[in-house]
Length: 520
Ligand code: 9PG
Image (tube, rainbow, N blue to C red):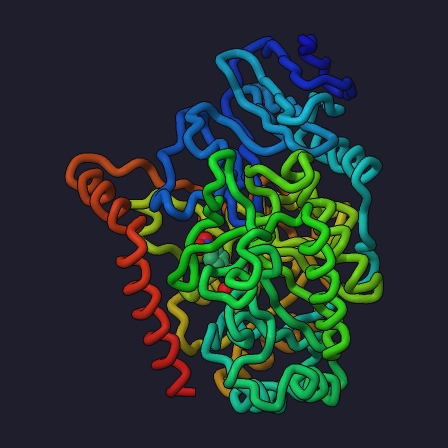
């Protein structure tokens, strides 16, 4: 353990230890929390404990479940405090398996896996975060951020799981004269989570689907979640021994989605490593070279592995296998992923929760105090909190909306999402071509063609080609419910963790998606 004096303003220090403590010279006024994976909260907050996010069954897929119940201000790999005078003190690990907590008047960094390098820097916020990003890049690697990012049409936020050959064919044809570089097929093409073959909705198969995209002059993109599976998959039934277990031999939960329990692969098994490499080679052979790998947190859950290596090191090893097998010329987007372990290994990373056609769900915000669920406010808040990663790789803020169909966002809220995409340079949408009226079509085209000058004015305000954009409406966090609302939250939170209830919810959601699909 090392005790560090508070660095002076403008100073940066790097030391190696399993634990570092910095005694603060004065009480801070705010704390920067950096959530573990894409969908976890990253934001400046006050020092009061955040109410636990509900439902608990989602903790493994929305937070680092090892720290969900920590009530002191804390975050993965780094933490920062702001003082009344404006200076920011940042303490951040330059390696994996690390966590930072504010403990009374001390900022404490701990590594789960022995010694790691730590960077401590004090000064203006933009300078200390830039110093941390630069040091991370030197240790973990950077990927090129020069030139424009590919402009992506992605099937998820309009069609959800209802994609099939016919509707995608229609969409691809309709998008013909818009300047997209990639048409990306999202969730819904696979036999099941774990069985990555075309399902009955794609009778012509995936090579034909990729060819249809390539015939329009675009790169073909595909979504997969290769590090987990459901119990009913062929993969799980054939290889139950490939899945991560705890010290009692019990399967480790990777959370719940698609109306089902999720289980994580133990990627340190040579057979699993070979299977992952084979899968990526298969995807390339089908003709896809833009690959969105999702739910990647499953590769870094706590458990007893075949090879006894720390969980994030195991995950980084699996990513190396995936990256090597897909080849350096593929565009690799990571999603639902622990952030630091992907540096140097992918081209882009999703840095916030999913957007949605709503600003905020009253249930998720007010009752569940959950900043990770799909919603435009949640997405903007956390993306803003992670823009400091921009020098290291491309950051994906998720899609922007242009069409009026199936969308409750106000024009101002839609504009905030579009502006966030302009700031990151990563531009994507899921809008269907026939949803776009003339105004929306013109707006989408000029968005895709724009390369504005961007200046950051403060934490939430930017200047985009001379226009001031203020994201502060997205920053506030819901307060803990009180009185009757607290009772309601407790009951709904419990119900929301019951698999049979979630199965019903999932069926209702699928019905909603199908209804929407019928109107297409
Ligand atoms: C496909 C989608 C899309 C989307 C991804 C991911 O429960 N959750 O917190 C949760 C968050 C995000 C999520 C699914 C579940 O969406 O981010 O772009 O690819 O999967 O299923």
